[in-house]
Length: 472
Image (tube, rainbow, N blue to C red; front, top):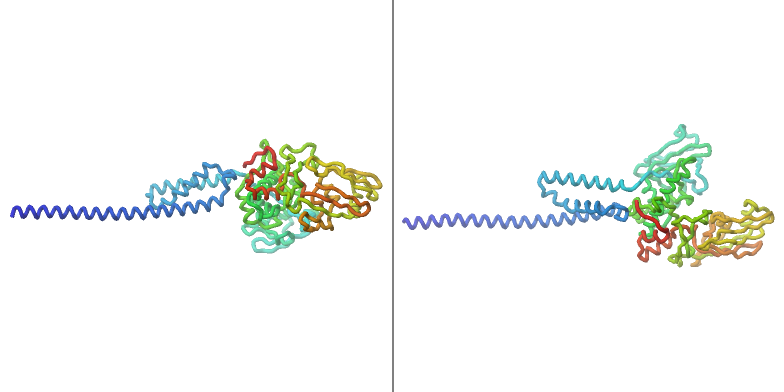
């Protein structure tokens, strides 16, 4: 009996021990199973966080746009670990919230690292002939209004409209895409000559409407980035110089006098180029440069001497440019009636009476005509600036034949100052030329071809502008 009790007693404790072992084993299996699921969930959340970070980075200025690598790493680390927040204790969650606040503050600091001041743009009429408008019709916040010099809303001299999210439509102005829509505010100012329209908006928003108006949005991304940096630098330089400030209270106008703005609506590709180069400008020795650009080269770029500068700016050297040699505008020809040029010579100082001859007497290093001798019955004069030479030989009303045989109606300016003359006295001038535009700075078509060949936007800019620094 004693042995039997010992046997049963021993079995009892063995059974208890066995039960505990079974329970511990089940618990271990359960823990292992739950642990595996947690890891799967963490991996899944981390993948989602990485996807979210990719989207976030595409919306932010790239590192090329001046984002320091340290800040970029901080943002990446925060996004990658945010998936663990559910698993943290309340204390750890509070700590992580402080980290998140720090990231948000970092993003705000990132945005404030480059200047994005408001730029004031003077809007010209539909033909780009005057700043003054007899009346203006606008639609803002769902309401259409027409103003003229007698409108009571202008009794104090001016009225400022806020376009808010949808912008302000100005249907009294015609552009390539109608009606033009302007972000920011629109000031309508009454003067004795008519109404002035001044659009004030953030510089970076302005650039989104400049880039597609100055360069086709279908161009390569690196070319569009180079264009965005040129346009930003040029705008900032004009804001510094304030040539329109005293008389009109504006920084630039919306025409080729400065930069074409709002002729085309912002496009996704060009807006991306603006965002990815946010704040980036070109400087030499700390000073903003005049980042000129033009359509197509004549085989070499020119300098600002074609506008009468005594000495070329140090960043504007003539450089060989064969990248755009196959572009249609790289070669062209046009016949201009003798009578058309004769009518224009009468207003030139020193010239009067009938036109007797035109003669090219000087070209600059790159081949642009910088001396055109005009001889008339009453005297002679010499034109030396690119603009006045192209204006005298305006092909308006004539057909220009491009290199590929395309015929294009001529405008108020000769396509470029790179040309030769074949004169038939009393009949016509046959002008054979190269390139399109003034030829100073960056060739846009060449930039596009360079981008196709793999050049980055910084390399493109360093090719056309000499000894410059790129940064915020």
